[in-house]
Image: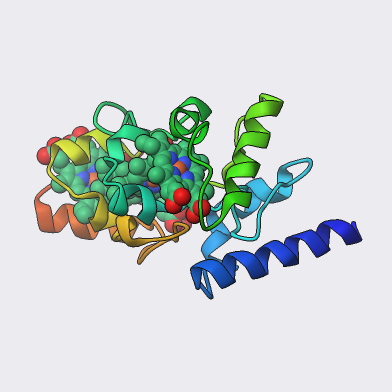
Amino acid sequence: MKTKWFLLSMATLMVFGALGFGLTRSADGQEAGGQEVEEAAEPEVGPSGQPIAFPHNIHADQYQIECQYCHFSVERASAAGIPPMSTCMGCHTVISGQENPEEITRLRDYYNRGEAIPWNRIYKVADHVQFPHMRHIAGGVDCAACHGNVAEMGVIQEVNQNLTMGWCLNCHLEMGASRDCTVCHY
Ligand code: HEC
Ligand code: HEC
Ligand code: HEC
Ligand code: HEC
Ligand code: HEC
């Protein structure tokens, strides 16, 4: 246990030192995924609050990878989709990472063990609510309207809303979308 904490704090120092993130994630920012963390038998959480400190800015801004390349079902399904391991390994069998190679090592370790990466979910609506991504994308609503400017984020953080009914309804009112109870509630 002691060794684990030591390694974690070492890694924290390295991540903060190299990227200068400072406060990457507050405890509050993890609220949505919190339950999953507690339920998991052996929570594997890196210093970033995620099992791997995945930097959106490097991928989506610096290397201009389209959101849809990874969030493959956002235009056609309710769920946006989290990329499978094979998407990452297409590049990271050869790209080792210059600034934080230890994060790529963690990625390869999951791959070699044949395990999926247990990402902590950030955005999640209540079970009695349905949220169809494809309807919003077809309606011309930008990812940033709900998730903030993800392309500029290091490790992703929850932005500006708690997925309350009022938040949904305000925008539906503004944009003339349906406010019929049954479109959001089964
Ligand atoms: C190279 C693949 C990749 C690209 C490109 C990418 N993402 Fe992601 N995204 C991920 C992974 C992996 C996660 C899960 C890890 C995390 O949450 O940090 C994620 C998580 C997210 C989440 C949070 C999901 C949750 O848990 O609720 C949002 C929102 C998101 N991405 C939006 C975007 C947007 C918007 C873009 C384009 C500007 C984008 N992503 C581009 C791989 C990618
Ligand atoms: C299209 C190619 C591509 C894909 C797909 C891709 N990456 Fe990357 N990734 C890169 C490049 C390029 C870098 C920058 C490497 C560098 O600076 O040395 C990078 C950097 C990273 C870093 C930071 C490493 C560092 O040294 O700062 C992490 C962590 C990472 N990727 C994880 C992932 C994960 C997890 C996935 C799958 C969800 C993924 N990547 C998918 C190309 C890709
Ligand atoms: C109108 C607001 C809105 C827009 C626009 C939006 N999202 Fe989301 N996103 C949400 C909500 C709400 C959730 C939680 C949904 C749930 O729990 O079912 C979510 C969840 C996610 C997740 C978590 C995993 C999953 O499979 O759903 C990802 C990834 C994501 N969004 C990516 C994107 C990307 C990429 C775009 C743009 C192409 C986008 N979102 C546009 C509101 C939005
Ligand atoms: C930033 C603005 C915005 C936010 C925030 C937003 N929506 Fe929407 N939503 C829209 C727009 C615009 C449409 C209509 C798209 C179209 O024309 O079909 C839509 C359509 C929908 C539909 C399909 C309605 C139908 O007529 O079948 C559902 C369901 C829905 N939204 C649920 C939600 C939920 C649940 C939330 C909150 C978690 C939410 N939306 C938040 C803009 C938003
Ligand atoms: C645009 C989507 C949307 C529409 C339309 C909508 N709701 Fe909701 N509703 C939500 C969301 C999202 C939540 C979850 C809020 C949360 O977890 O904080 C919710 C929560 C609720 C709850 C539970 C309250 C709670 O504290 O958890 C009730 C009851 C409810 N809605 C009733 C209604 C009724 C009645 C209507 C029609 C007049 C309606 N909703 C229309 C999105 C919607």
